[in-house]
Figure 1 (cartoon, rainbow, N blue to C red):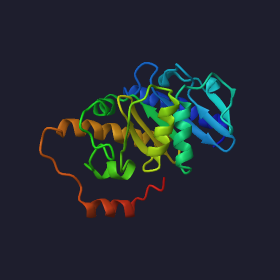
Figure 2: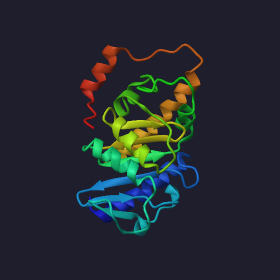
Figure 3: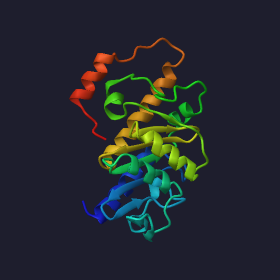
Length: 212
């Protein structure tokens, strides 16, 4: 897929995520890795109103070379790419159910949401919690880089989700599955519920390896 096609895909997937209510206002950002750099949604842009001609372009050294100014979260995306070289696209959303989970006390920081469904295991797997830092803080990028060594999907405390994928469509689907499971988790939180067995998880991981 060439750059123009990737920019058009960013516009379309931004609209899809916006229609689902996963990126209120100008929150959230998406990016695609290229051999010569990065494509990034611009700062203060609505994901539902992206313009392909104004997508931010960064070179392989992270310098802004074309399009509008990139999101301040670009350093967080770069940290995830650096930690997981197989990731080719990143989606960061302030999706409401994931955001709600990220504000709870007493979470397991190593794996926030239990393995409730096979699709969650297949698309997300382990979900570490990254401690709170202000948006755009270089310390947040460093923390994301450390946590991404464990998983391609992370929950940012009081800040939402960030996930990688093999391509932008895959990253968006991973984010959507995480958000759906966050909703399930909150609906079930005060009830007795079952999780997938260790053997069941191992079977899924063998049949559907993420390789991210």
